[in-house]
Amino acid sequence: MVVVPDPATCPACSGSHVFVIERWPLGKRHVACGCNDCGLVFVHPFATPEELQAFYAPGGRWSTVHGDDRVPKKRGAGRALMGALDQYFPASQPADGASVLDFGCGAGAWLNEFQDRGWTTYGIEPSTDLPFERHQRLLDIPDEPRFDMFIAYHVLEHLPQPLDTLQRLAGALREGGYCFLSVPRVDALAAHGKIHYCLQRHNHIVAFTEACLRGLLARAGIQTLAVLDCLDRPDTPSRRIRLLGRKTVVTVPMPDVSGALRKVVHDVDLLVTAAHA
Image 1 (tube, rainbow, N blue to C red):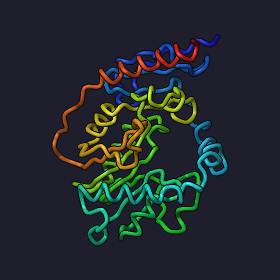
Image 2: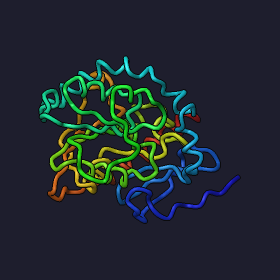
Image 3: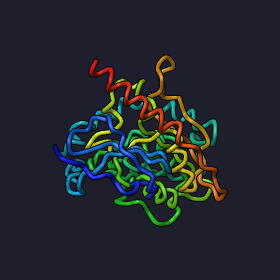
Image 4: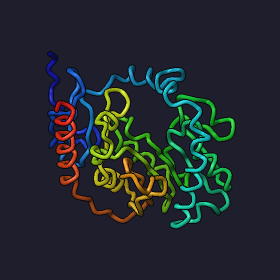
């Protein structure tokens, strides 16, 4: 048996009030941890940078699992999303020169929807060249505020420093710019029914409750405007968190993360106990 040392600090907020979620099954070399300061759930230790680079490289395991077939599947979802965004700002009728950055754009499904409505579209994606037949490619997040919106759709759960990434993305937004984020909802493990969906050794290495994600956005200077359920089935509990936010200069209150984190630990106990019954 390999003994895994406890982490000293949270990889998102650098808080020191971290604990091991004892019953989360991640094998002998990894443990699941929670942060009482920001509410993040994360794998410890993380994969090495070399392992992560190999995982997400073109032709790597990520591209074989998440191929270019995602584009047609998202067309209906894209129309639903644009309709939901229109309730808060004119996403379908953008101002001249409005630009959007999709961080981790995959095959470009969301960018296609925005471009079709007149947006100037940019993407960051290391695992495929497909979207850049239509959209402008960036290799990294710009340091200056040049976008009116950014998208991070099921990306943050793959990153070892999600708050740092959010702060950089917020820095690339113009004042009053918007963002759309989606991540797996770790405080809905009972609805998932699959404990490994939200946290894995090399893929989903961090996980969020809604309170945690709202809090990290607040630390990045982004106020949450709405929870978007337009992509959910009405008869099924949501397994994902989809938030619309807006960059602000006003200090955003921090949410209480303790209740949702306790629910995560409780759901882990329930699922592990049921699996061994």
